[in-house]
Length: 84
Length: 190
Ligand SMILES: [Fe+2]
Image (tube, rainbow over the protein chains, first blue to last red):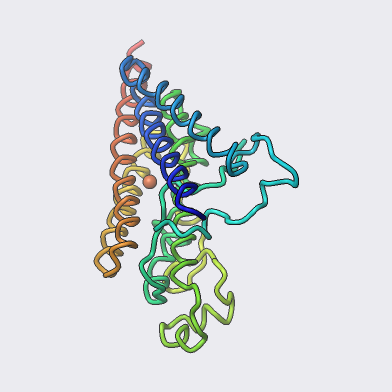
């Protein structure tokens, strides 16, 4: 995996992680309006990064569109990537 | 239902192949305080939670634990990568190799297979959430002991991330317990 692709993947990981943290927090603090707004913008940022990644490098998620031939199965799978 | 996302939650790195660490680490795959046990515990208990906060939290943390299971598998896979049969024998993994080669299998560090007896689902939300909090602390302690056993800074970076997640989960379960307790108290009064 080249540097550019790995950088975008790591950026997406970080953005989704932020969204997850807020998501868990909101499960037990559903009335926290500020956290809710942060959650919504974190999700928006993660979605934008995910779409950017998928349009360049193929699907990461079940419902992403694929180029020909079927890109979902293309290597590397997550456990095969060198994250250095 | 669930969909797979073709990425790890955290960039799981190892500095070098290390069979001894693979043998220790696999307990977080199929051991008593490992990630499969965590995920199955929460995803099984969620059905009988009385409040939406607890149903949501058990669903979400149960799902995150599956992402951790994948990180552990990735680490073990990388730690065993390229090992020769001789090295496997010397690391005390000969018996594992006989049954599984270098494939991932749900066992603890001593080869004991995963069992549902590691988890409970009591139908009593107070009992279940206390179990969940204890489980998070036990997982946190396991990561501490694993970090003590490892001298690989890359591996330790990922193990520290996982340890930190257990701390956050413990906190959230504590909050859910409080919410459930308040809910049950109100029900008694009215
Ligand atoms: Fe956890």
